[in-house]
Image (tube, rainbow, N blue to C red; front, side, top):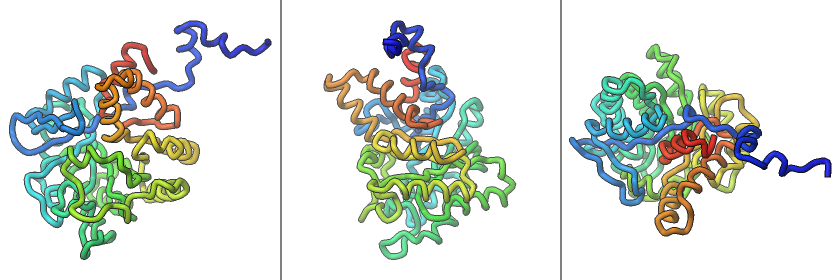
Length: 325
């Protein structure tokens, strides 16, 4: 045989030399849940090993992430009170705004991204302003722009709208530009599917809808062409980075996106993916570390440039140890 594929698999040194998929710690983002109160680090039952933090305890998780080599976080907030307009999301003293100011004062090396949505803050749990039992898309846009601007004024380096309202990228971009914040990048949850993988997150962020579901604004998981339609529209409206969410069941969407667009592609490995790996590892069904490594590589192999993951520190550690990357 002239061609022998095994020649390039004969040693770890050679395997690493010819590796096709390279992973950098710079591509990792860690999601952080922050809540009102003091001295709180409250484990999330549905997500073992993940916590809700009060602002004064954020340093503990930041130290862990920085030690591993992860310096980017995505903030989600749990407000003190909820109302129909989700005012806790855009008030200057809202929980995420307080977390951003504290972080910029104490951990300037942390790159801060604000999740722009309303579901955690509304009394009804939907991602916008209601008209009866339906979310009013166009009325909601002004509120999303207000949230994004409040986060930037509090110190957000980037904003990431996750609501899936039509036109929200343009509304936010115009609001930021008008406020002389044109340099602030926008990462759009462009292809966000209506997924059962979000279950643990809804416990973590107390964001389950009080009635109905989100299928009228999040995407049908049967559809792939529609994802590209959403992605291209968001780029046209000013998105600097687009995101596919969830990750593992949507590797085909990540691949199609990477092959189609010229902006960076992010993927969010969501709470259900995390919790399944934790549960299988605890039961002894799989080697947890090996599964974390393999699934992370699969997302980058599919074409992602950025990975948002609750396993960010573990993935960074594997890179440090030379196990992946």
